[in-house]
Length: 268
Image (cartoon, rainbow, N blue to C red; front, side, top):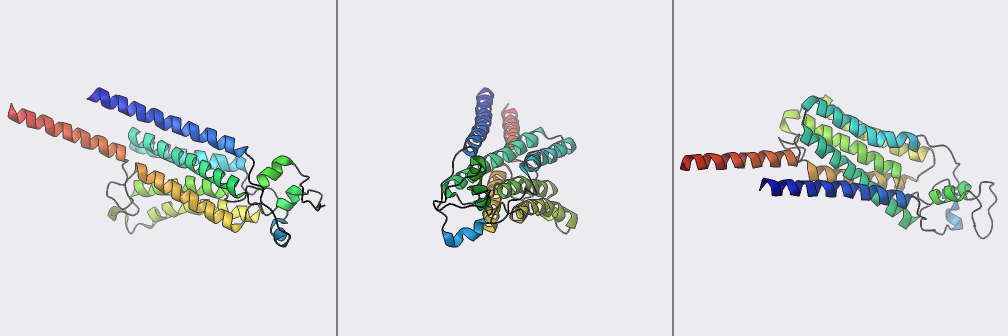
């Protein structure tokens, strides 16, 4: 029986790894895909004539924040608690959330094809528009300029820092009875969300996204990270919210085995 369980666990773990590799591969492929070429009417052209500026939070800053910050928090928790099961489950949770978020965000971007607020200057760098509205700018900049909705910065920020908020809330029992009336614990839950909000809002300040883009991006990221978190961890108001389901399942199995042995001893 133990052998069968061991095989089952290995198969499930291999599937988890393969799933995440597949999600990364699909995300990278979709990043290079051409979005829907949405028609821009003359009366809405003003929406896309904002100046081109550098990102306040460029991807060189975003990716380390999104991927390394949850890893640091998870490793810090492991150093304190020495819980290997929690370490593996937390890593599986956040990587699944980030993978799903990348896939969902890119698919919507490609289908919608909404131009960015600075699309006019991506399309016509010299400011000279032709009657056919045929872009003369850099093809890569133009392709990226049609991927405004939803905001990837916003969705990834809320996925990553949303996970951190949920993870800390579970470990500190922020919303369970033992964590009530302790404001520092509540602040530890709010702070990561506030960081994600700043990243999202910066995308409207540098004219890379419309406000609708960051709102929907935030909803997507928050929803996916919550779904994935609840797949691996109990509700935040539970007294055992600090333990992953895998640890609780193992504990229950050990107790059942122990009870079975005790019953066998009684019969002997």
